[in-house]
Image (tube, rainbow, N blue to C red; front, side, top):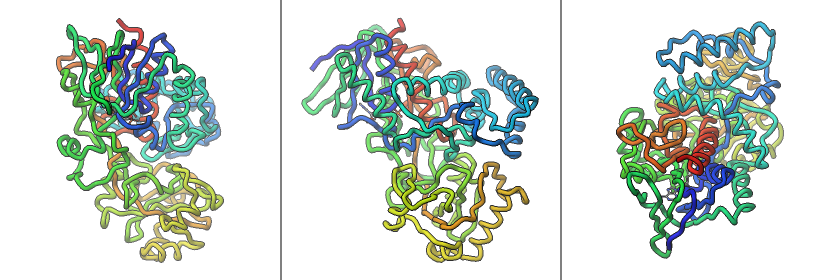
Length: 501
Ligand code: ADP
């Protein structure tokens, strides 16, 4: 089979479909090739938190003293990179204006988002990518809304997101995103073809430019020629144990037996394909784990947290062990040091006002309790007994935490993100373990989403977006930054593949 389109997109997750929509909006006829029998990738099974500074949705939130201190610490930091220094200057100006205004609502801006992203990745992220990313995060929310997507009218702080700027789709998991793209594809099916069950294998290169893709379908070879450009959007390699082990050299102990939140297709194919055309790879050693895996499957299903502010973690001894508002790598490392690398997430009625209140995975707390995946009690002592931790230590942990919430004591782990005390029955507990979640490394791109080769030159005709790319997140991706990443860079990649010479 031989087919031709203006733009060929490899991978039908969020980045690929954002690119497909964007390429089509810019006049291209498009083919999307997807190796699985359905679209969606990791995007479909993600928590779908989407970070963007958004003064409208943030106007309902009051800023706390520890949060003010966080902004001041970031402003006072020392930065070497010239672009990063401009963010610092902008933030300083915005912060002075904010203080002068006498406002009490949560402060936020793209500059703060940039600096938190950069610091959260240990200053290893690429400033030119972070700059484009945070500036376009909110415009991409509006773009999605223009395509019919609905977000809730509030924002929240997602695990490892560090700030209250995560947008929540009205529909559960990644379905809000996927339905939005797929509706667009369906309406424009005369111009956008989706080929499922077909695995891209290698790029077709002519005179140094990528001009197509050779793929393998159920009935053999499929050749896809691109008259304008190819977008690589094949996602990460979290489900490929061999590849994880090859690159996991700095952050973690052996990950061979650690489970993953990823779908089975997250095997890093696109990274290997890009390497074969001399693409530069960046940050391959940075693999993200979450402290939030289901003990049996590693998936995010069964996670009972509803945002960062209103839950704590305790170990098998019933003791807190980390700032639960910290970075994902920090929390996971701390969890690995606890007995059996095992913890309990503790919440109260504030997170589940009723038994049919659902978690992020569309599971009601009653159903989770019935299935034995969560525990429910009217007192902290009873909850401790049910989960087999020392009631005295457990009650003390919660009481000490509550003092930090009302400001009568400083948090013993330096936590800065609080809302309500954990003091209202019923109380709930759910077990969690470390799980592989995201691979920060991948193909190097520039701010136009063009793929860069090992010599620092653009590979003509080749664009990339999403988890297959590296650089943006440095050593550690902030929670809520992936959905923004795939939409911002998917949109740019699709447009540029359709229009750049
Ligand atoms: P992102 O968040 O970057 O969009 P996803 O994991 O959501 O990443 O989507 C990547 C998609 O690419 C998945 O649906 C996956 O099955 C698909 N994919 C991975 N490798 C290939 C390949 N070799 N050919 C076609 N599709 C692929």
